[in-house]
Length: 568
Image (cartoon, rainbow, N blue to C red; front, side):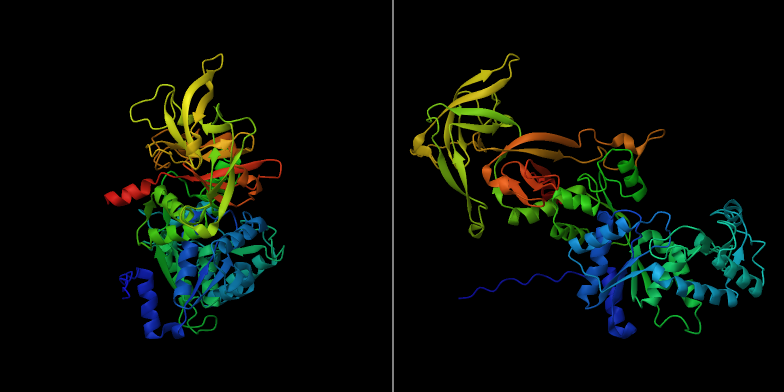
């Protein structure tokens, strides 16, 4: 009789899905969904961007739509082709493919033409105020703004000045183009915002063709409309910018520039992570000041850093799904991210043995040169992954943490007179030890039970302790990098008066060890992931070469998030 599996309850829709489904049901946009991911190529993407990528691409996939990758390259001072390439790589690594690739610079002429249209409609003007004067005239949240003395310029004069700005007649900062909205609006973004500034900077795509560049708030919505994006999904800090987004598009009253219906901006809560900073500016400082080795340092929250540390795209997507889509900013516990990678690697990572802090163990009743080749599984539950051959010899390495000269209560590992199981190999009993001049134990002398080959006692006696090990004569030396959280404080930005967020940088966030690995790991290649039994999950670092292996600890075996979840 066939048993019917219970059908899982459907997940409730998040608020963005509700909007999209309502639009699809009404026939808006002719049943089409189009999203975009619009990064500025001025740095490397981090885990917060990964969430945005998953939302934009994931929602389009769910509703049979498409997603464009658009680089917001309107500020060439900070932008570089290096960042463009890294962004492409990150999006592809996460498992997404964009329908079209665009740049804001693709639309420079259209943006300029629309700006002229706004000038002719009396909706924009050229302003000669300095930056300091502009700030003074705009006021603040407590003081209403006042009109620029140049706000009353005629359409003809504004058009002439703007065209001369375009022609490069004026020096940098001499003039700007501003939208004419409401200088006393309670929303500061509507107080005659800047649309263009003069900036003679070489652009990585347009060269020196443009001495003026559009501002983000202007270029972003217009670019969305040109690409016929249906839902412009962005983070919550742009909520107050939405009226400006709509204002720019709604000035095309004749429909000369944009197809209707116009895009709709929707904001979701940005992602923050405990023990982490997410600001590009602060991440750049960490790199520049040498607190990390680069943008792809495995301690960084960048996507390339997570990739180098050994995270899988599946685990990052699962994390984004678990965090969900909210309307208010949130802080996710880093233990949830770690839980997601453990869950993924538990199912797929082959097992191996590695001794991180080696201590020599000599099996005195095992003959010199005698080798027993053991057949151990790569995964305890997946026979299809096969087995590897592990040599068992007279001299082996065990971890220093698995021995105590004076064993505490409930100590089930090795101690003088104690018997333990060498994983998959045999039972050994500690009969003696050797110390150096400082009193440090440097070698253990043990005997083994030949009848226990394979790890079980021939008489059925119970041995509680099981430890991992590596044959000393066959061991593969490797550098193993143990990474911890980069910041000691859960919120590094919660700084007391007179303090600095960098005061919370963890001085012990990286420990490099010379470890001894079982020989099956000798052929491991950069990016390969393993579970070092009883230790954690590790990935081969790109620094590895034929002469020396380098492994990064992705995450330990202990799952604190599982405990948090069980209590919740």
